[in-house]
Image (cartoon, rainbow, N blue to C red; front, side):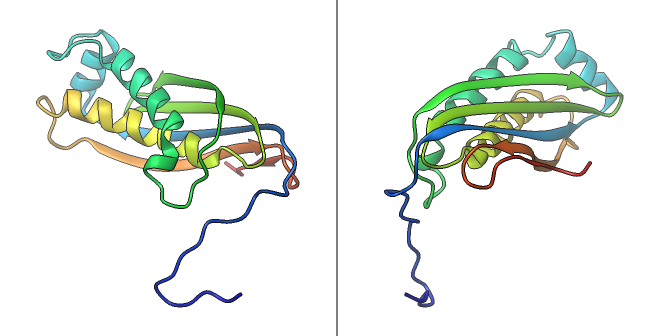
Length: 152
């Protein structure tokens, strides 16, 4: 059945096999060196920025279907949010796993996006020029398509 303009539909996954699936995503939050140092040293006025971002990213992965209209609700079995400081940016990486009939790419991307937005919220008083950029899928595994890795 063809798509009619203005009509959307959720993909039917009822016949797909459950399998182990993984997705990894990354985003960069660019800020001035003073603010990056404050984040790293846990010196922001609102509290532990990285702990808050980690919790927010985990919640975002678990609740992606409530934000992205055509995502299937799925049982997330693992989420990891990690941080890496670069001279000009904070890199946030997520890894999400499930054993289900569809992948967790959107969950990994949402986890990174919301973690970055949480850092932005907690640091915006110190740097109005913070930029969140380069949100991307790095890797996905599982399902019919097997393994895919981004060319970096």
